[in-house]
View 1 (tube, rainbow, N blue to C red):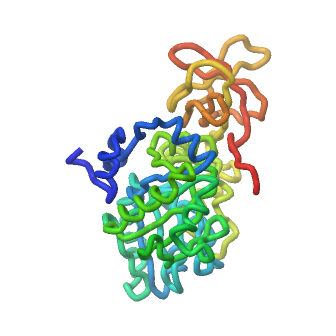
View 2 (cartoon, rainbow, N blue to C red):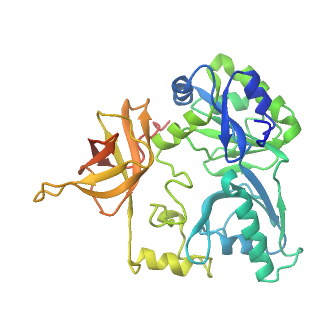
Length: 381
């Protein structure tokens, strides 16, 4: 573990008895002694606390910061206000996705981009290359890589707001999804608090300086424990995001599967003013002008072994007795919340909800039914 990158909370996880493993070059907690099932239950019924410090903050500021980000992002950022956040995708000009990101507007001419740990370096290099290629000055666009300087904590679950409100000004805590409070003291320490989430539940992300991360983490657990808050690892987080039907870069979207193919076309704003990198290529995919097209489908299995990434999916036409392979799973697992096996994957066929397919697991075909996403959706208040 010594050769891996550490977050400001790595040794807390070790002291707490977490099972640690490598993830995107970091030593990260997979689960705690309570087990992933209890962690998932806590997030769905109370609250869970996640260390997401492996994710990368990148700051973009300057007189052309908005225009610059609007050029590299598939989303329309032209109408963002201070405190807004937007989920989008950064692509090469050929439509190949580099990463999915969230852009936060912190102040006039100042933004923060959050990228995935596995793609952080590539995103930074891409931004700097675009800036250089278009001869943009530092006054117009300044890019600051926040790698290693911050702690990032995610508080998720129906009791998350109540817990956060006990250590931060409840009147200033973000109320709407995809918004942020750029300067909101948490436990008395300066922080940025965002309301986005990755679990399908109400939740908040807290970005703070690395030397205050452990203090905020332990205080949140102290005040949240009576309400059912427990620390959670990557295993439960992956199951929660799968239940919520959220994509994972490298699975539902990668260099071979553009945002349109990955079912994320709603996050590509073709009508925004001006050109953005990847627009022409993605328009061809949207309009069916490419040679090959696959479709991201969701499957639910009432019985059988647990499906996993890479398992093959088969379809049997009514008039043909043989099974034909139509694709592979990108994510799969058992959903404790639903009590069923669930999966997502790319298919060469555009099937309908209710259609039957078969997933090959351990050499045996198990029936599955095409369903719609998300698998789980929290009840409205």
